[in-house]
Image 1: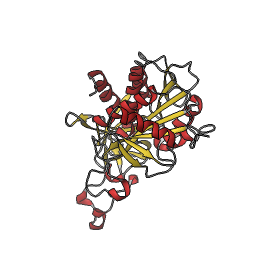
Image 2: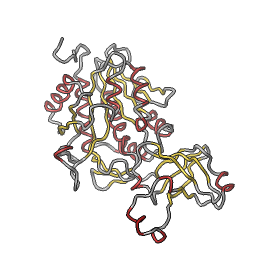
Image 3: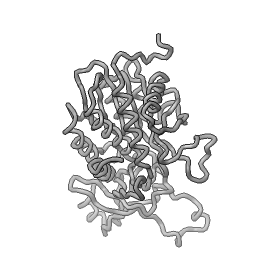
Image 4: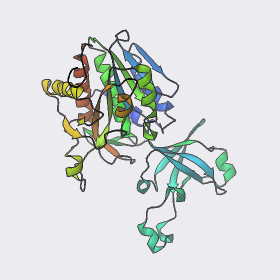
Length: 357
């Protein structure tokens, strides 16, 4: 299992506030953790973080995990001092009422709660309908617009309240697990590879703005110009009721990460990854990705420059895009081992062209 230092980083990282486009807090946490063990750690103008091992190597491997999370942004303050907001990323409106949130301001976090009309005051027909986001507000306890404006401003980002909690020895819940768990795997893989003798350069990237269009990976992959790219993201766990396994497969928490097969997964690289997992007896689960392109950073890395050999490694996740996403540390640990052994085995002379031509 992960050591104490890794688990402390995981909790600190998960509790960072990092809505898409406002990821500074998570970026600093990520960079500070990797700075002591990497040859170079830097950021870019978008907010991506790039940690480098063996930078002089011509053959480059990129690991990408996005640390932005879904959230909101303030668009209007009412006379009553209530804050109206827009979604930032793919929000499930059914999960939002009564959520505790933090408005992120230059002076610090302002706590609030998402409110709506009480059920007692709803018409019968309204009680069975999902409340629109435009009919919700954030209440920070202000008594007027003037009082609220002393605390917050139009355009301030909003994050879900930090709530990391271990449920047993292996499983935890947190907001923003999509995809801080992937960025955590990137960081732990970089720390493991720092102890190995490498023949390739490795670039561990914490990417931004994935939830609003894979934007951070697009820019960082162009800058890194990798020969091989791994995206580590979350995937749907199907070991809960009413999930159609015949469409999404049989994916269980604790059974290992998902190794995907789809149009944005290079078959030669995929075989190499599976070979490493089998050789070191590391558990994994087979998955047919439900999207060919566009769902994860894999897609945009693959299409960088003249093309990149890519593979998606997914950490099974329950309750995705909610405030209580659940993952299993055994899956993350297995992902770190698979990635470490695969990358450590690379000579830099591999040919990833399907068919070998």
